[in-house]
Length: 159
Image: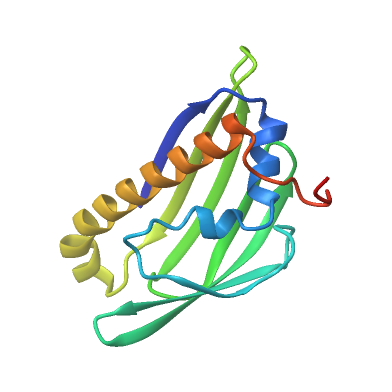
């Protein structure tokens, strides 16, 4: 199954990509209504680096381990679920030059819901709704941070 979200950001791809590499970007991209804690995070989004998120499904804690698999600055990077709630999850972040000084931020998620056929039949509507809300938030948070310059690019010390 595939989910896609696109939006325009009034900054070049290099800046939008730099935001995603910046310290604290992941925390800024987690919607406040999601009770998710970053348990572990590498200092980069290069292949092999991992992120571990912890959330709750009812009273049960759930760990989601993702590993970065592709890194082509400033055009794309990708991550896949190593373990977590989905049967399969592969997420490609695209940063496309719009030809007008801006970026089309495009998130493509190929996923398979848990629980096989039952998950596909009964869970996909709920999953798509949650993904829509989450990526709306993420794109707006990215747009605000990048267009305002409110982030510190990786590898730069504050003045």
